[in-house]
Amino acid sequence: MAHPLLYKFSHILKQRKLKMFQKILYPTDFSDVAEKALTYIKKLKDSGAKEVVVLHVIDERGFDRLHRFMGEEKFKDLKKYREEEVQKHLKGIAKELAEAGLKFTLRVETGIPVREILRVEKEEDVSALVIGSHGMSNLQELFLGSVSEKVIRRSKTPVFIIKR
Ligand code: ATP
Ligand code: MN
Image (cartoon, rainbow, N blue to C red; front, top):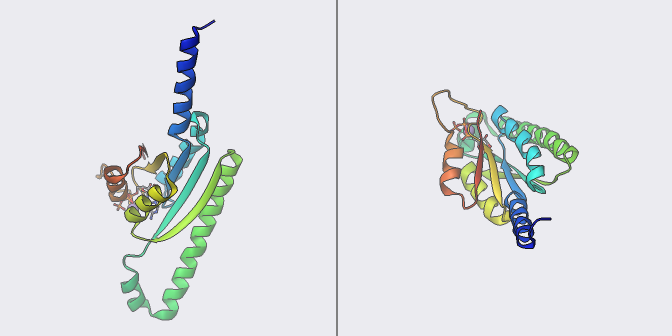
């Protein structure tokens, strides 16, 4: 039998490990890389992941220009179409997380992605973030996308980067 002290330490270590990934913030732009990140989140269940906050940010920059360019009617249609697309994607993610046995909440915010991601990180008091190294743009010559770079720089909790 292991020494009682050793047993105690391993118990503490196990609890720490469990806490590290307990509540995960998963920001997604529904890109291939972000989708790949989801497969890793499901695997983190074995490392203590219990709950996932799924966050999509509708980037409002450029809305004004679009609005002026398209006119009221078409702009409204476009927004509605985009919102429906977002809901479809979220529904798929929800299904996957439920099947993996993880609790989750789905959040949609409108604003500047980096700012909203950091705000939700704080608000939800998450233990870690899991994001893709790249997103929709996925430029070959870029080491990191601009959102992931800024999130890594500014977040208060550990960030797990899933490479493309
Ligand atoms: P860039 O946007 O700088 O042109 P990119 O699109 O290739 O580059 P990022 O936008 O930095 O890369 O995406 C990296 C990761 O950040 C994504 O995989 C996703 O996890 C997250 N992310 C990006 N945009 C959003 C968003 N609008 N809402 C939620 N998460 C996002
Ligand atoms: Mn992007």
